Length: 268
Image (tube, rainbow, N blue to C red; front, top):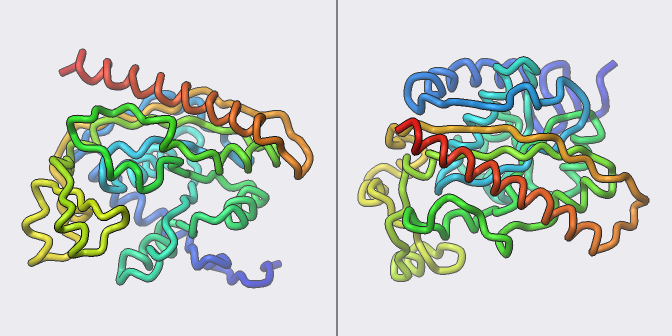
């Protein structure tokens, strides 16, 4: 039986699993040969049941999310994962269509997240959000607590959803943010008024969206940490509980980032 709002091929968000699998096979070529991703902790990925994958945005683009999807799909768990994206992304030509129909993304709203998790989905989210674009290549790879929102923790604590920290490094080099321009920020009406400038930026005037299409090759690393499960409570979750759980995941994620960064330097 097909649920209301669903068809045999598409779910209520327009997601098509077959197209997702085809996309993953194509992206696997980038994973293996272009970014040369090394993934660790794949055995920590649950094979079924709801789980929140909480990661750090390692850079200005979303290639870390795409490669995390590939890693999970071709892991022993062999799962498809859904992701949360910015409101408005779905309206962009091609990018919006690819994000929803091909890659299973949904607008980052708590109702969407809770709905997918209630269906037993694995859901990828980045609590830094757009703050990751504020980091330049000189700021290093560690995340800052003030930029690490607690929305995921509120959902996890409310519903007893396990959280899987996912660290990534190396992706900050595929479109490295050299500095931020306030002039271009005002010109292009960029949020916060600061436009990230990368080596690819001069070509944006001629080829829109060049940054996500033509990244620099860089060796990248992903590591899946240990599952962190909060105690399930009623629909009323205290702010102290949410803050403590957010802090716990934040510390674990930064520890994974440090370990990966050390691994990268030792192997290079």
